[in-house]
Image (cartoon, rainbow, N blue to C red; front, side, top):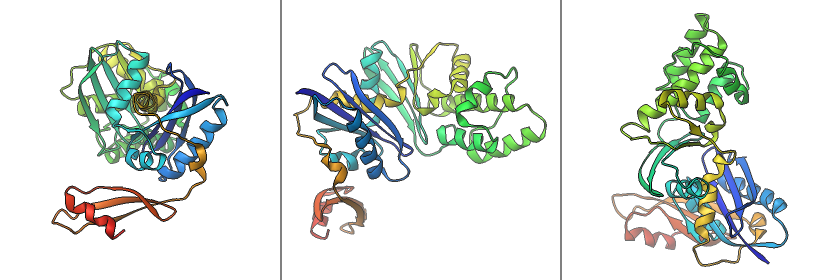
Length: 317
């Protein structure tokens, strides 16, 4: 039986999963919407991966990353739980060892990772505002009655992109309506939105960062050729994209799981019942919110406490 390694990247908008072999070759992969329920999303991802995994492979390593990495890592019995920065860097370097800058724009957040000699030297994240992210583009596409999949192709037809104020989603929507009422062409407005996403990213997430080529663009928004084109024109550099760019976090954490002690993972978890809830500690002025997970009524794990008094909470759960 050949060894395989599972990586799960649980985001606010989408959940990604990959299974790799010992040489980091992707054996199976999937990408599904989280829909506000990370546990069910992961179960759906596992069902999909199981169907595509060759029968002669057994998973001996599991890694999780993303916003719900602790929760899903606990449920899966992962042998490594890692932050998105490290996971994305490792996944990217496995395919592009000379990369210096990673631009990542997802559904509701974005990040920049700077590397030198295959080591992360600096990074920044934006998780507080959705302006300039995938959800922002999706909402504007709906407002313009354009399938978001066609956004990039339409943007490339423009010869004079319309300036759009995308620093704030509310202002952008107001500006978009105003420009449309003034008679700006739809392709110019779309191109302007793509350019505004790139500028918003560089002026916020990328502010003060020394962006050096080679540069790779990842995340769901990297599939939008209009935004890719905007970055290339602003930075005057070739932007690399990868068909599996949205999977780099999952790939990276799967690779990291290879270095940990092997585990005996099965897909039976898909049929098991888990319950997650929270309780306020009240053991000190911090009033920490403790998140805990139970399987069939038995406590699996809990976290969120900022002092040792939080450990006493398990007696109340």
